[in-house]
Image (cartoon, each protein chain N blue to C red):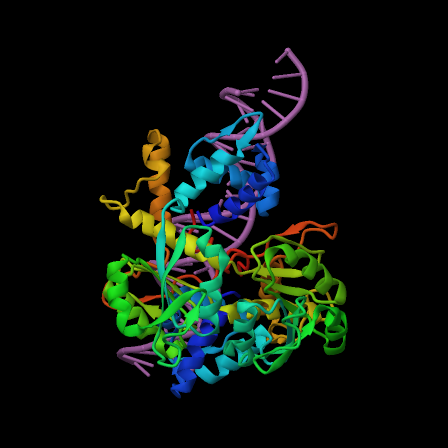
Amino acid sequence: MARLPLYLRALTALSERSVPTVSSEELAAAAGVNSAKLRKDFSYLGSYGTRGVGYDVEYLVYQISRELGLTQDWPVVIVGIGNLGHALANYGGFASRGFRVAALLDADPAVVGSTAAGLPVRHMDELEDIVTAQQVSIGVITTPPGAAQQVCDRLVEAGVTSILNFAPTVLTVPDGVDVRKVDLSIELQILAFHEQRKAGDEPGAGDSVLDRAPGPVRAAAAKLRRAAGGTAKAEQAKGKTAQGTEGDLSAVMPA
Amino acid sequence: MARLPLYLRALTALSERSVPTVSSEELAAAAGVNSAKLRKDFSYLGSYGTRGVGYDVEYLVYQISRELGLTQDWPVVIVGIGNLGHALANYGGFASRGFRVAALLDADPAVVGSTAAGLPVRHMDELEDIVTAQQVSIGVITTPPGAAQQVCDRLVEAGVTSILNFAPTVLTVPDGVDVRKVDLSIELQILAFHEQRKAGDEPGAGDSVLDRAPGPVRAAAAKLRRAAGGTAKAEQAKGKTAQGTEGDLSAVMPA
DNA sequence: TAGATTGTTAATCGATTAACAATC
DNA sequence: TAGATTGTTAATCGATTAACAATC
């Protein structure tokens, strides 16, 4: 399921180029996945392909959009209009996929009343009214970490059932509420981990504690390193597509 | 490995509260993972715990920081100083973890020369010089999608070997270069998917094509739904910690 | 010693993928 | 028909986790 947005993006690109059909092999390459995996993924959605021919691009775009719920309008509120809140309010990728910014909210009187992305920033006091009136079910938290849980509680209390959390805090929510977290520094930390490994003189060597550990630990460390080594390392130098990670989805959404 | 930053964050919180030791059970709860998994993860790093007692918080913080390469300084360049570039330049989580913004770059003459987060925005022409002079190995791309590949190529050519990509494009890189992608709209799409499922009257029902499919497909769809259902749904209503996802790491960094 | 908790094993679970029959 | 490509099976691979011996 977490790969559907990837497929959709690749398919949209094909659609814009007016490509009528695509094979699992081609589409898999464009999305950076194994073709067998792609076919299996699509088989869960139904049989939308034609043997010997491939998949109809437009039809797949429609079916995946529908499956993802992108054919409907999703009002979202963004709470915390600092730099990141501003950036998200202006983020084009939201509107184009059915996400409509219902309101921008902030607790700071200095910010309230200003505009971002053409919308006025409103005070937190209006949160409940806005969520109710516009039937907002998705909230985006871009506050400082200290305020995140409180904001989360208010959103949930008001009726929001999905939260995208940019604050570096673990949020506690009641049953039935989904939380997805984006932590920008974690992504960098993972890159740094790999950089550190590259820096060693020996292939795969580093100055990590793992390398000074007793035999069995070193062996495990080497294994770990091999496993971790494949982040988004391209398979070959000649322009192989490296898709990297997608803010890690597969583990949480295994289907 | 991808969980180390999570553990580190939980440990840092404990450290600030001057908690001397922590059991795998407690730390696992704080990080939102299974305690057996946590112990296994730590066992790869070495034996840092004491049976009957737990783990020394400070020692673990140090070892994990070290393992992640956070004890050293990582200069990064941010290319594309729009809203998101601005937000990242100001993002506190970078500096606190050893990431230093070496330069902000943009191609737009109207932006070049302005300042963001106290740093001057410099022209793309200076990219190569900056990367070389400051030995930058990590580049952050916050350009529009159309410019991303070109920027990526220049970064790689200049010597950058890790790229954090915020542009909604699949980047092609040579062997040895790591790419991690953060796509903000994908996170929202996944939330929308779950929202759509919740909206149905029946538990787990929706108006998806899956529900109008023939028997075997419906069965598979139900299975998919069960699997996907667990995004970050809290295990219980009474304040169970929901950790959500972390921009999905585990799949790519399985160790 | 008794209680607690780690480190590790072994079982389980689920995801990935090669291979190929079905079929356009 | 011949070639191509899907849909699906079955094998493989790896991650998760319960359980418990080791040991503080």
